[in-house]
Structures are given as C-alpha cells and as structure tokens.
Image 1 (cartoon, rainbow, N blue to C red):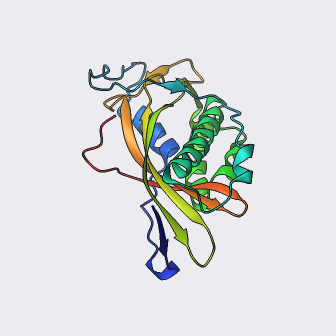
Image 2: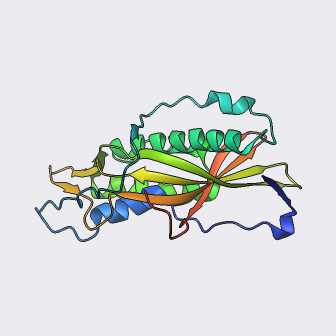
Length: 211
C-alpha cells in the first residue's frame, strides 16, 4: 500500500553501509599469516542463491511510471536496483577499490561518501575481494510518496549471503570473514526519483527475520 506523507513527517532508517560493514567484518580479528574460516551454513538457511555479476542492466528503471501500480511491482523494481548496487560495489572491491565512481549513479551522495571510505581502505591497505555477495530473497515492507518532490521510496527486506567472499592482500594472504553469520538480513530503501532510482539507506530488520 502506498503511503503519502508530508515532508515534515518523513523519516529514514539509519544508514549502515553494506560495503563498509563487509570490509569491517572481513578484517576484524585477523592475525598475521592466519586464515580464519567462516561459520558453517546452518540447516535453516534454506533460500536458494542467485549469484550476482557486475554490469547488470537496469536501463528499464528509467521507464518506470510512478507511483507503482502495486506493491509487487515496487518490490521487483527495488530488488533490481539493489542487485545492481551489490554487483557494482563488489566489482569495485574485486578491483581493489579502483574507479569507485562507478557506484555514484546508483546511490545518494550520503551513501556514496560512506562507501568511498571502504573503497579507499581497500586501496590504502592493499587488498581486494574474491567472491561476491548473493541476494537470496527480498520481501516488500512499505512504499511512501514524498508529496513535495514526487519521490517514491520503497523499503524491502533483503536476505544476503557472504559465504563466498574472501579478502586477498597484495602479499598473497587470504582471509575469510571471521565470527560473522554467513547470511544476514537488511532493510533496504530505494528512492525512485525523476532522474532514476537511488539506494538511499539501510537498517536492521525486525529481529524475527531469518535468512
């Protein structure tokens, strides 16, 4: 259901950026020369994974008519844009943080500034990623319309796997993500503007959500 809310009442989930979070988890607690393996997959983590790849074409998003005709249409469009975000951000990390401007058209300025910190860390510390996150499933939460701007914001819950991600340093050391669940959920907000969709924020989901 589409909610119309005046600008004065509009609220946002707190921004917690995926790339920066993944980097922090991947590097936290690492000891020199040692490789830490990620926890084994739990039996209830059942959704089937669809691998993502860089270069996902989202040109159809430019032809979307707002407001969306249904919640399902909003979810599908938000999912497609989030897939493009994931594919582009991980491609940058696979390149060691080079050419981070590739992400800029897909995200808000605030998100890009936060993501840039993670990319710059990859460059300065000399590491890159191998493997990629996988978007397992998405669920529609809500969509809201900003009456003053015409921007429709769609919130979805995304279940994501980081099981295949490995950090590779310039000296050849390899590190997997220590002490972190291999699958996790986030509430994702995509803003659909007159100039195209932008990933604008994410937040912790309801505690009952499991991936």
